[in-house]
Amino acid sequence: MENKVPIVSVVSSFSGLTMPVIGMGTASYPPVDAGTLKSAIVEAIRAGYRHFDTAFIYGSEQPLGAAIAEALNIGLIKSRNELFITSKLWCTYAEPDLVIPAIKMSLENLQLEYLDLYLIHWPLKFSKEVSRLPVPKEEVSVIDIKSVWSAMEECQLLGLTKAIGVSNFSSRKLEEILSFAKIPPAVNQVEMNPLWQQKELNEYCKAKGIHVSAHSPLGSKGTLWGDNRIFDCHALKEIAEAKGKTIAQICLRWVYQQGASVIAKSFNKKRMEENLEIFDWSLSVEELEKIRGLPQCKFNSIGTFIEPSAELEAQL
Ligand SMILES: NC(=O)C1=CN([C@@H]2O[C@H](COP(=O)(O)OP(=O)(O)OC[C@H]3O[C@@H](n4cnc5c(N)ncnc54)[C@H](OP(=O)(O)O)[C@@H]3O)[C@@H](O)[C@H]2O)C=CC1
Ligand SMILES: O=C[C@H](O)[C@@H](O)[C@@H](O)[C@H](O)C(=O)O
Image (cartoon, rainbow, N blue to C red):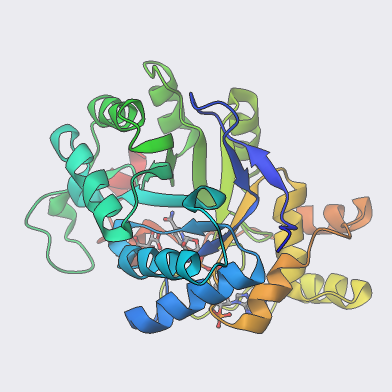
C-alpha cells in the first residue's frame, strides 16, 4: 500500500533519517490488554500508519513488538525499516549507568535491534523505591542532564537508536543540553494542541533546529491526564462544521501547519483512518488566526503522576 503520510527530516548522524509526520500513540487509559493493543496496532499498520510511539512505562512495547512481527509475517510490511519506532527512557532509569540497560530492555520488549528515536521521557529522576502513584515528591528530583544525555549519545553511537531526543522539556532545559551536547536533541515531544499551543517553545525549537512532536493533540480525551475540552470547544466546532471536517481533523491539521509532527492515539479503525485524512486540504489564514486567539490551558501536567511540588516545578 502506498503511504500517504508526508515525512519530515530529523537530525541524526545516520544520514537521511526521516519520520512520518503522523505517529500512532500507544498509551491507553484505561489500560487495555496486550491482545487488544496488538490488534489495534496491526490495524493501524493496515490503515497506513508507519510511525509508532511507545515508552517503557506504557507497557505497550511488547504488544507493539508482537504487532510488528505479525505485520511482517502477513506481509503488511516487507521490512522493519519501513517503520519509525520511538520509545522513551522512564524516570526510574534516568541515571547514566542505567540508560544503556534501559534501552536494551526496551529493544528486547520490542524484539527489535534498533529504535529510530529514543527520548528522555521527562526531565525527572525517581528514586529506586518508587512503587506508587502519585510518586511522593521526596522520591523525585530533576535529572542530572549532562551525564544522562551523554549516555543517550552513547546509545546512538552504539547503533541502538538512530536518533535521540527529549520529551516534556522546557526551552530552559534544552538550552542546558545544547551547551554541552555532542549530538543535539533531534526532537522534543511535548503536549501541543489548539488549547495549549506552545508558541514560545515552538519558536525556540525552530531556531535551534529541534523538531517538535505533539503528544496529546486531541487533549487526551477519556484519559486520566486529559479531558473533553477540545471536543467541547465552540470555536473549533464552528471551524470543523464550516469545512466539513471533524474537530479531531482540525486539531491534527493545525499541528501539521505549525511545522510539528503529531502523535495521536486511536484504537478505533474508523477514527484511525479519519486521523490520516488531513493532507489534501488546509486551514486558511483566518482559521489559523481564530485558533491562535483561543484561551490556553495545559492538560497533561506532571501533577497527574507526581505529588505537587512547587520547588520541583520551578526547576523544570
Ligand atoms: N511524552 C509524553 O509524556 C506523552 C506522550 N503521549 C503519547 O502521545 C499519544 C497521544 O496522546 P494521548 O494523550 O493518548 O491523547 P490524544 O490527544 O491522542 O487523544 C486520544 C483520545 O482521543 C480519542 N480519539 C482519537 N481520535 C479521535 C477522533 N478522530 N475523534 C474523536 N476521538 C478521537 C481516542 O479514543 P479512541 O482510541 O477510542 O479513538 C482517545 O480517547 C499517547 O498515546 C502517547 O503515545 C501522551 C501523553 C504524554
Ligand atoms: O505514570 C505516569 C504516566 O503514565 C505519565 O508518564 C504519562 O502522563 C505520560 O507522560 C505519557 O507519556 O503518557
